[in-house]
Image 1 (spheres, one colour):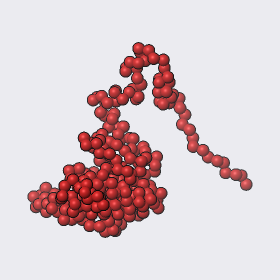
Image 2 (cartoon, one colour):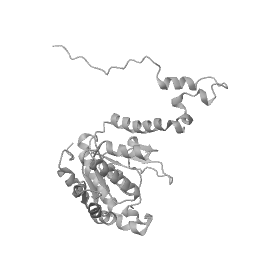
Image 3 (cartoon, rainbow, N blue to C red):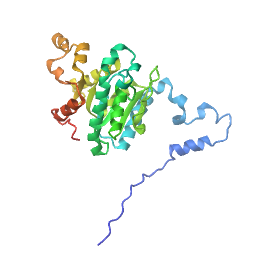
Image 4 (cartoon, rainbow, N blue to C red):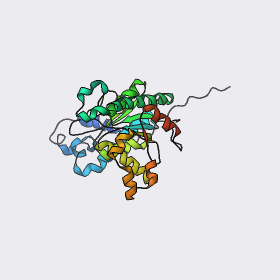
Length: 283
């Protein structure tokens, strides 16, 4: 009986020098007026060149590709996205609340944390490839989501962005799945590229922007439907008059069924499992 032959990955034929090899050679060159000139830098290794106004299209492409390739290499198949306010305080540190009105919202930190924990427990069965928690990577609700995923023993994706007040990533996100963005548009695309469900907690302009872009894409059928879960019915009905939009004719009555209100993490997870269509958490 013949032994099965061992198969090895086929190395692609490389006819041209590797970019990293050429950069290393360039860096070892003798200093001369010519080699020290910015014009002599390799284009891909020239940060000043890459930041030129005319190179915006290239930067957009790079910002799309860098997280995408990292997630492909990690084997990430699907995500469960958490949107919510950066200012929502941890109940254990209410003294950090930036305004008195934020204190009543603190319990949503705990719900986001528990929601992420429950979802991640399901994700562990797929070796953290399916239903991976994805947040904006910052404080508040985002921190709670990253924290719950970590407490469940899983991983989470953080999609941070450079802001004037220097938002830094929370310390609970998986480091090799923590990304930083310059363009809001590309960041929002990454939120939804692998999304299997979206949970939206109370928040401000950024949260509203993310929610309405998601609803618009589903309403216009530019994206397949999925569970859209709004935590805190009283909050959402107070700040958005959904019935007025229907009465004015600016949305149709069925559009109000694109989302559901929930109050607890357990309720949200159960609703995702029962959502009509092939969008549950079964993987």
